[in-house]
Length: 187
Length: 187
DNA sequence: AAGAAGATACCAACTGGTAGGTTTCTTCGC
DNA sequence: GCGAAGAAACCTACCAGTTGGTATCTTCTT
Image (cartoon, helix red, strand yellow):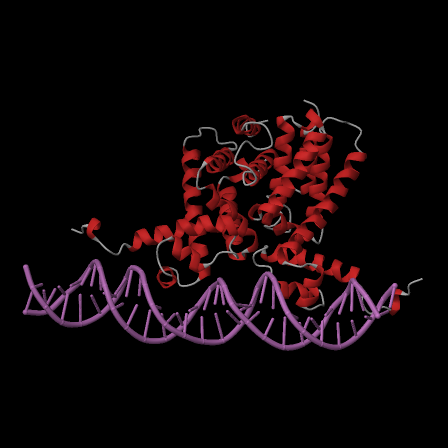
């Protein structure tokens, strides 16, 4: 039996810290502005230690992205499981999941990480594949233009979430959320 | 009378090239990934030349941003001028203007530049002020939650425009545009 | 002549990454 | 049980290249 509390080296924990601080810093400075040195230091380890867990910056960034994507995937899956109506089910899960993330404290991590998706081709590909996968799996039930529009809208809300912590352009988020969900019901 | 064809130095032109190539490179690599050296070279000038026009990287980035913002402002103004219906006028102009930009070749310049807005506080402030200015000026005619939603949706469309050059999630852009505009009409 | 436009050369700071070491953990023969 | 072997975790020192920025010089325009 291992007694974790006596351990001096805790690779899993260190790895976790590297991912989390990396995500946060990414959110503040973007991928290009991310420095291995800084990530390592804030995670309480040296650059050499970081490079032991992630052999290159690219590897680190992709790991951060995968980590966040997985978390989002789980949220979406949970939302979908509790939605009895097939039509627009994925879109509603996407909406609720995204708005959930906006409310989080660690929003910063998500923020520019997803933004970096735009400049980092490998991340872009991952995201597109994820979305395409879901849209294909759910078949035609999420292909309606209005559903597409709803997804875009929540993307926009998420985007504007960076600009100010408080309510978005004016309306409380809950009002907009309900309005969005309404759009996803059958015409 | 100046005889431009004999000139060897054309500062206005150089400045313009610096702004345009800067915008394009920004779109490809983000602000943090932007290198003065690279901007200068692609604009056909040395770094020293660039730093003569823009005394610092920050100054260059802000100038690029201002330049693009001004272009967008003109588009929006033109759209608004040709819209007889006051209700949702700014929102429609915002929608049409944004979708116009998506279709452009120089979309890349806009792309990550606006993204950088999120990490660069000074740019963020400029954007928020621009939007607030318009929303305040147009009074309550653009405060309706549905209009807000429509603006978010076009933001999302613009965002997803980075992911693939072709049509967005599936529907042709024109279909979505019409649907969006419909949302901006009185309830 | 005077100032603007631009080039050249240079610097300190920082970047991602490598090499090679030390410490800690796990495993396995005994 | 114990202890040695070997792997995993982590650190120190360093490298070559790049960064933004400055100082200085030349060329062009007016």
